[in-house]
Length: 119
Figure 1: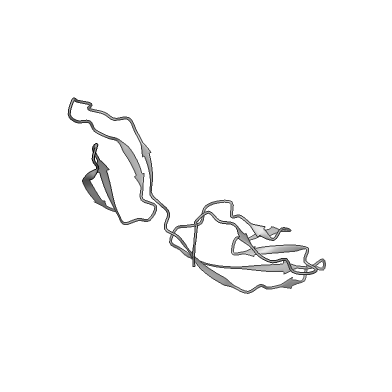
Figure 2: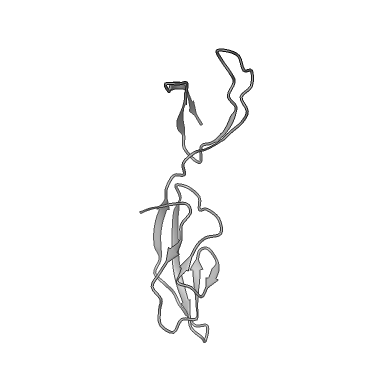
């Protein structure tokens, strides 16, 4: 199952439960949902479960579930063009491929592949 790298986990409430422990995220919550504080790693397999605690702090261990996160889309931070001339310029940018191994850079009024980078 492909899950986005930013996601919220949710589950059905269990009776007589005071608190839930979200494993492996090491967080307790009194709610029936949990959003990790940071994005998960892209294209990574995770195992998770919910343990429930009653008022005596007795634990009922939940069933383990597995999922794989999707591959994140690349991000681009554009910079200022330099070496501006009437027929050319140098375009500056920082590309974070976010785990992708191949991408194509397009340029011009009618985009055509200008360069292909393998990372």
